[in-house]
Image 1 (cartoon, one colour):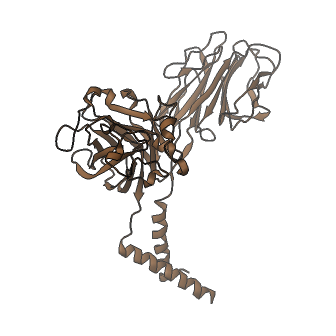
Image 2 (cartoon, rainbow, N blue to C red):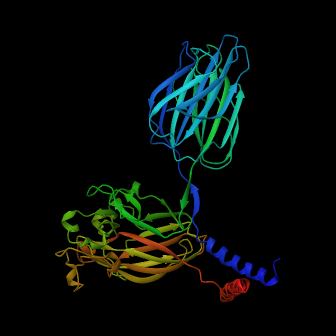
Image 3 (cartoon, rainbow, N blue to C red):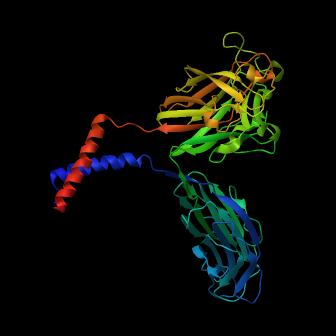
Length: 493
């Protein structure tokens, strides 16, 4: 029997458990990749099996084989089995016409197929007609098993995909001597002869009807879902990397990468990242200039990187950065001191952030000579209003710039050994409402000469601040745990 006090204790524990569940990882779908495809006409012969030798699906997590065959000797006819490397593949679906001239189509799969081996297709009776065929797909990023199947007599069949992001594989055996039933759009033809076969991606759950040319006699389809991947609750760590300088990209270990070519406007697109139990987007925008030369993605070479003490192992973070060239000769808006002139902006848009409080940390260091102060503004209502945050500083590692950073900072240049301890590492805190995107806008306080007219951000970390329980909730949970302990001690007596 559960007493009233025990019920209260259980309720308090449930509050604590429910709170902790908010911090668990969630799942999302991976992308299904076709590693390899192969098709062959399995023409005549007295044997009841057909072998494709030494097929290698070792790099894939699913092997799918589509078989089409017919027997025109007035006998029943079907596919007996399919094996890979001696392992029996799972029959997803098989459709027979039931006619005197019996056309049969089937789909078979094997999860985690392993090392290369022979694919052997066995029939219940001897003899492959000249109208038989086999198609093969090796896939990665799939969930185990098969999600949905369908089979029909005729040139089409319909199935329902239950979740987004599936691949549907279909096949159709032809009517006697009538040629290959051609896959109809949106199916992608797997090629080969005799058997019609193809696949399509179904990004949204719903009804799919694979269709072939009118010569299709029996048609089958099978849907395979994408594997679930763990989406961690956070934090978000992003490193900005150049893909066309110093043999980059050089992504910092533990960070997700934003890669782009230097001064290539087409490369600076929205990119997606796993964090906070969802997918967060990052979009850079040079909002008040149009010249691609403003859009910097720099990666320094060994001559400058050698001036960084890499004891903390963070050279890949500070060697490269995304940034701004404010010079008018490069398409920028020229010098700006915060009052005089026009700023040249770089804005980072953070999309799909769950509601909550966040700590921002960004890194602003150049292993060469770029240095100087910059302003930061933030908008948490989708860019409608802006709030000025404290100014920031960019530091460098190499002496002798134009101008030399030591002129402005007696302790500079800075050579490490830990990017987190640099005076240029910028900290901020903000609230996201879970609806509007958050924008951070940067502008260098530029002037004088080149190394104070350029600015950069190496990368950033974004951490969600744990919500503090209301005092009444915390007190209730504490009393619940105290009551549970008391109850356990009494039971022991």
